[in-house]
Image (cartoon, rainbow, N blue to C red; front, side, top):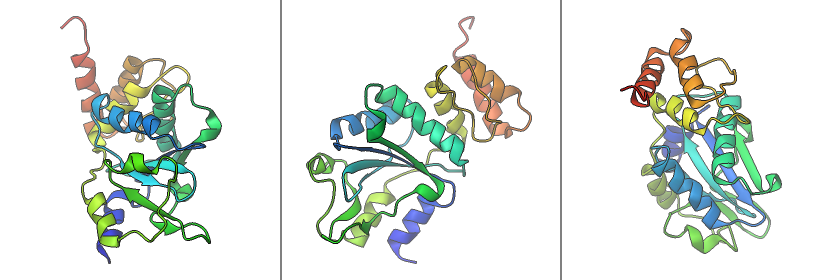
Length: 214
């Protein structure tokens, strides 16, 4: 297995990859707001950045434990509502499971490629979100080697912060029922015996940390 294939397997094996895409136009400032926000607001690892080879930027999220397509898409929808509330739906794609694109890959007869790109170089691709030559495989592997998956124990907390009345986001290990508020969601997770113990403990800790009586 090549270094690149090994890194992709580490991060994006079955059920562990989620992609949020913005196109028409590809706007780096908007994409950067999510890339920074998940780190600063949600305390999550930085996702990988990719150009689609056609018209879009992509953020590739890795989850340490597999999640269902429905829950993964709910997470991405929560990000969209939080960071891109004014962006037209037609510009946004939320991808999981079999819908995931292949990166890197030649995407058309003109020789344009999708590729992972470094944060410092990402703004360069706003007008042309593609590479016109094949990306170096070792360079792609190096970029992915610096990406970390979202730990399973932090997944419930991220959902709780993204939860809204219009887009409830269940825990991937919990039944997909709506929660009317972050507190209600955490209570649901904590009291559900089907949820792994580690997630229930994390939910309890989050409730205690936000208890106004303490």
